[in-house]
Image (cartoon, rainbow, N blue to C red; front, side, top):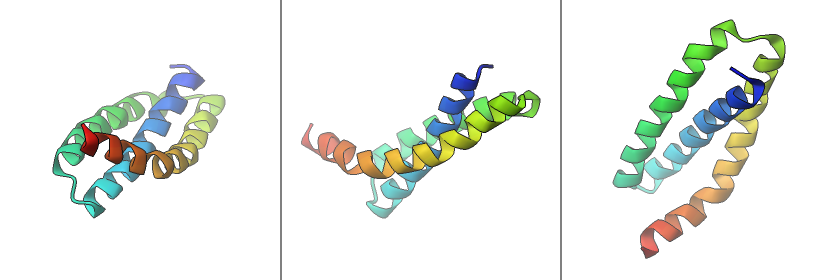
Length: 86
């Protein structure tokens, strides 16, 4: 597993967890259900590959989380607005 793939798995995990928190706050049942499936997929990827990761790969994982957190907070309102308008 490359550093890039691990970065994106960590990014996705944290992004989706923060996104899910916003779904709970706004009681978005459908988005919450879909997000739960995606969270499971992202976490399975991390659980599978992190135990054997090298130091650079672990650094990539640790960088993915904070970036995912900030991006999720920024895009959630836009995604919900698009979801409701469709």
